[in-house]
Length: 445
Image (cartoon, one colour):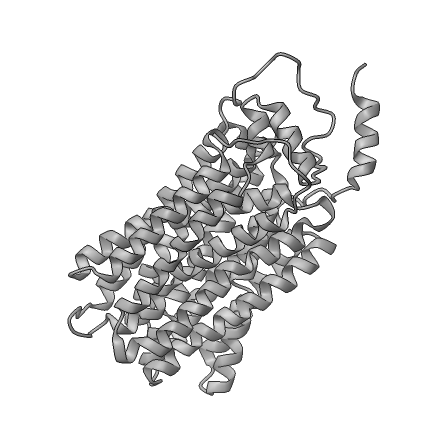
């Protein structure tokens, strides 16, 4: 249980930095498989076939699905802090074990375990960031924190380019275990969620923590705790995602996550191998993943700024359209410069789009359902992520190379744009001071 005592004012930047570093490590560990795939397929001592590589990629994402479901169910019951640190520890240790795996079967099993931790960290970090960010800057702060996975994927590509050819895959995975160094800092500096503390009846602790971090959230307004009571967590958190006219939006957001993650994980898993088959050298082939990651970082930042001014839904639609258009161009291009530009834009509309979907989900649900809503939306998305590597293996091996594979990944991006159009637009965030005045008038006296 988190102990909270009276202290001087604290900055929420500490929370954002820890969440960002955790997501950076999450991104490295998640996308490193695609960066190292050329070191597995047909290379001794692994001698992996494309079909087996696709199966292991999908199997690892089954672990992520399980991790998202666990996080979605337990973060609103056990607390964000415990789940974030536990997830970080799990995938860090699994990555270290991957570096010493004796064969590809054991490696695949360890990737499954790592996937559980990776899948549990994202919804927890997003929920914490959303809660500690001020109302006026939620999309911008969350967008900046969500550059973590994209920068992590960029680091994975850089490390793979420099180590894979001469040293093989093992040191690339060993470096991923460095994320364990973040754990003592998180134990020392990361606070618990005030929304969680209120939900378990610790209203005084929640109020003290909110005051210390300068939090004035619409979730807090007009909800004075009943004296002498300690209500249990609300029952049926998952069922709440479908009540009060939430059914259609919830299913729409789940399908949107599915299509987005299918595109992202299918493409990032197979992009280096696709370009290797197109005749590029191993280092150059992996560099296309680096290009995709740079586009994802830029897309996340731009989408966060524009999403704050408009709505996350708007940027999700733009992102899907941009990714689909770029992949259509890539399917017809042969020039390295055109291909590089196309995959840069695909990254801009790929991970950046998913981050805006996460932002939209986080702002759609109230605090009591936020982590549950995020966890289950991402769990639905993991179904697409699981399909993605096998879908990519089919597109690469049977469809005729880069041309068909790029076209195949443009299809789910186009479908995502259509579905995003039908999602409800989030309510515009109002000034907390005005909301406080309004709530004061509405609270019965």
